[in-house]
Image 1 (tube, rainbow, N blue to C red):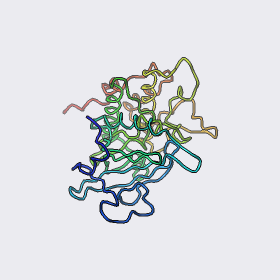
Image 2: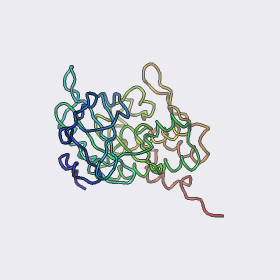
Image 3: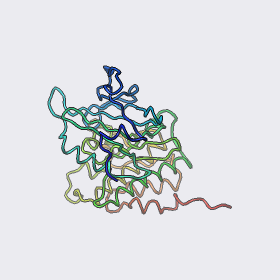
Image 4: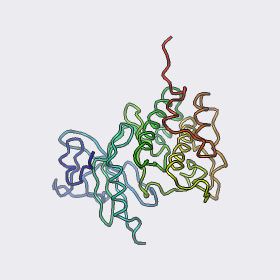
Length: 295
């Protein structure tokens, strides 16, 4: 499906973004994106750039969507290449899948990137864990299956699309706890903070020619991160200990909080050699994810 151009977003019945000048209302001082939005849901540094996330509403249909604004320049100069970002966001916007957050439109200039995207009512998995604690049982399995379905879709594109920064912050949950992948593919999202290294595959942290950046090894990096997400979800904590040198432990520990079947899946994901890790499709065939047969 083609990208919805930013000029057409206001006429899209599922997501209508209102420019401040279109409504005659004064743009608020704390909303630099130029849209008539609600208060900030989240602010912070993502991929090395300062970002603000806000909810917006289509006042004709009542549909809620999200406006994400990233600053591309600062007093220190340009933080990202606008044309490269345009190509990468267009790639993301062309992907349609129930377990991938949909891009509804975007605007890009030399100062900022503004992305309009699908709203997930529950929010990120990480935020849910902070508020409610660990998830187990059927809910953990549902979130895991949704995440794997999203990865299988990305990894089977031609060429494969690698998420590159899979963690609880980038797995969004809708009101029915359907997991949806977000913030993938773009270099701006794949830049890593010390915190995100806890989900990072060991070969990504080494300059090792044996595990070079092939499509197969890169998709295997997502599988490692998925194993870390299982530990994160079952413990409501970071899956690895990160030292002062921002280097994770030699291996991500598999938590006893996981059920035996889920532990088996996590161990397969966290194999040191990326060539030994199963694909997302192979993991979905694991008996842990098989539906229970009625007695």
